[in-house]
Length: 333
Image (tube, rainbow, N blue to C red; front, side):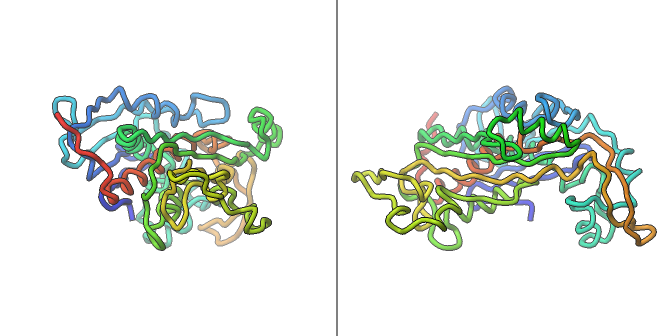
């Protein structure tokens, strides 16, 4: 439901326009030095209002480390991190309550929870909750760094354009939102993380990735292009005893298990559902479809804010896989 992971378990909580959003981590090893300042670079990368094409809503995103940290070090107890919501404009959502927004969870959440859901700003379904994922990712990336593993992500294209500015301009000209393609890579992975079948590394990463709002597709290595290749073309010839391969069509995972090569995958990010354009959709009060416009502060291209969140969920999964493999050395005082 709201939790992910076996030994490194991450739970998200809060709502977009409620008092707070946050994250609870269980399984973080003791002895990890941790300060609020360490969170800020990644939190700033996730924020809106910092770059062209993102929402003008900007929260301070100051992390409050409520539990699990003592004298600047993690204690091994559950870590609870809170982020206050201070820049909300909930009246925007009262005015459009009659229309479930296409592409949002308004309609499905209303039916699942009988109308008791918090609909302001998307409530618990909002991308606002990714602030907690990013915080968890800061810790996960720090744990991975102890073993020399580094996770990075970048935008490959916006609206099909590798020139990101050109892609944004397409959306601006159309007065509409636009999607994008983001790639994530993890370097330094040893051989042996992950399981076969249901807990394959691809399965676990995909599970986490689809928790990010707006993700609609994922491919590892060569991905869907493999459907047009022969076996000889796609197979990664093993070049050395440490598992390094001449190519990396598999994306660093074979049989659900890391093979010592870079982990590489890409995700498709849909256009932001809240578009400036007039849309035609159901009116709950009348039962008829009619034109309406969405108010509020929204991203022109949500893909711009995805890379840091993608790094975070990937790091979360990798730390859990590392712990399950018994590959994390104790942190000594």
